[in-house]
Length: 199
Image (cartoon, rainbow, N blue to C red; front, top):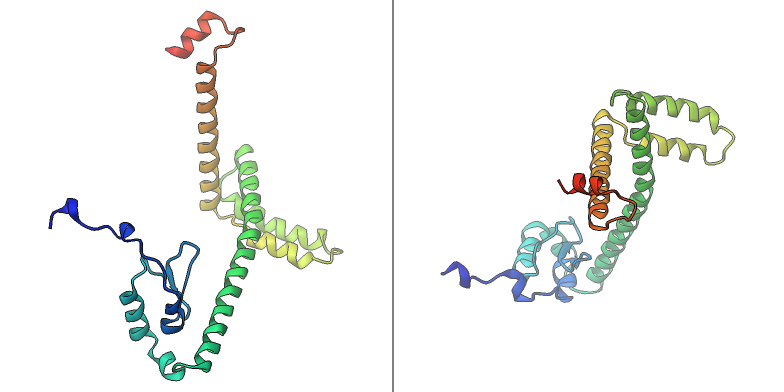
């Protein structure tokens, strides 16, 4: 078969069939692709054969324990609730992770600004935890605050990665500033400066 005439999966317009939830214990992720309710395995496309094969090869015990009927529907509903709970927990974790990630960027910036080695991140974190134990002892949510500090990524590799990302961001901003200065001539700019920028 000629490579130019080969079918592409994206052109087949496959969609998830809702009957697969009860038959094979699959639901969809946010992109519409099938995800197993039992083990969480995700598939790259909506093909009934793949979904059926997965269920028959990996989850025969479920099929034996819950043949068709009300018991099976109840078990599927419980699996769906568990999946929803885990999604909600993940969303909460992501939201809380954003504040710790932001804080680790701020700390990395301070470490670099003062010319300290990346390994000082671990030291700063340990000291911050010790200080916060006493500083927040009268707060009702002291344990939550200390846990946030403990969850903050602060290894030498993390500080290095944060520093590189900030440096890339600064470089991009500088390039944008230079490009905007070159494309928008200023009446204040002398001819000599214009020549230097265009060189």
